[in-house]
Length: 167
Ligand SMILES: [Zn+2]
Image 1 (tube, rainbow, N blue to C red):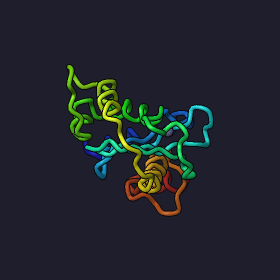
Image 2 (image 1 turned 45 degrees about the vertical axis):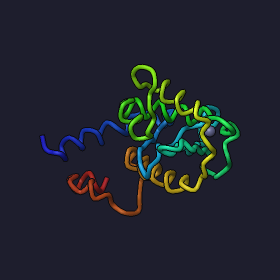
Image 3 (image 1 turned 90 degrees about the vertical axis):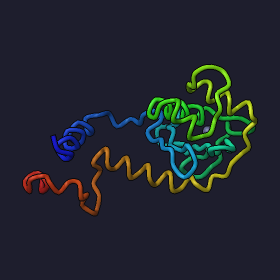
Image 4 (image 1 turned 135 degrees about the vertical axis):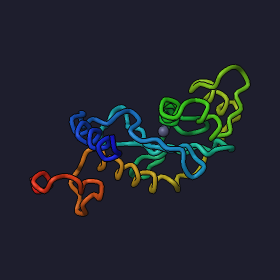
């Protein structure tokens, strides 16, 4: 199976998913940070952009409107915790621990031991400068997943027969 055949399958099934956001719709290990987007439990219009810096564990959390998260004071808020959990699901605990430079003292790395280990070092408050680029990458990711209408054609879509593209 060629790459485009494989990706065509993924693209056909993706829009069938409900439009409700997953708890953590976007997570990445990039720019020396674990960072991503966590949806608010109460308001579907609001999401949080959360991040943890590798090595220092400086953490930041703010809404997509750039309001600071009330829970992220002095210790990880629930969004940062949810982000770590999701990263472990997607990348595996070993890789997340290695990337963040967390040394697991006891036993195997897991979302819990990684979170506990970082929390125990009293991580400092980071800045939210990275929130805007992370959020815009998330929107692009979302548009790609949901085939939201865009003004520019997606190069990946060009293999569709003309009849489909016009419809
Ligand atoms: Zn938060």
